[in-house]
Structures are given as structure tokens and as C-alpha cells.
Image 1 (cartoon, rainbow, N blue to C red):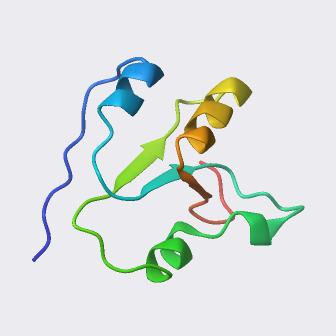
Image 2 (image 1 turned 30 degrees about the vertical axis):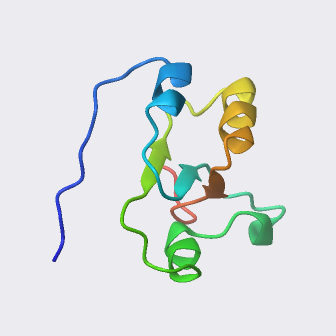
Image 3 (image 1 turned 120 degrees about the vertical axis):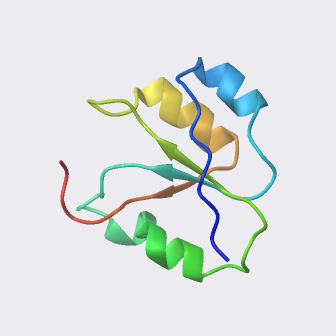
Length: 88
């Protein structure tokens, strides 16, 4: 069955990375229209792997992630994905 995901209050990025659960992590970024193949939709990325026991979704603040944050997150083996062509 499905489980309700756990949402945590905001904490510093370094602390969040230390507390990261086991399993794959997905960094949600704006869709890169110049290179759409480099950032698959989250749906496609999830279909491309075995079903994990746990995973983490990394959603940035309003206005998006800072370049240094993106670098740190990708350096922590998160996979960059997007949710689709629209930005709210």
C-alpha cells in the first residue's frame, strides 16, 4: 500500500544532506528546455529504476535553488529531474 510521506520543517542544506534517508534522491529543478534529455521528468526517472523502499524528493525554495546548492546536491548523488513544462 501507499504511505503518507514525511515532511520536515526547513533546515540548513548541510544538515538535510546529513539526515538524508537511504535510497535514491531526486532533485527537482526547472525543465531545461535547451537540453530536455539531460533532465528527465520525475515520472520517467522513477519508472527507470527498481522500486525502492524509500526515496527523497528535494524541492527548492520559492525562486529556485542557488547554483552552489545545486552543485552540492548533485555532488551528493541526487538525480536532477523536473515535474513538467509548467512553472507555478
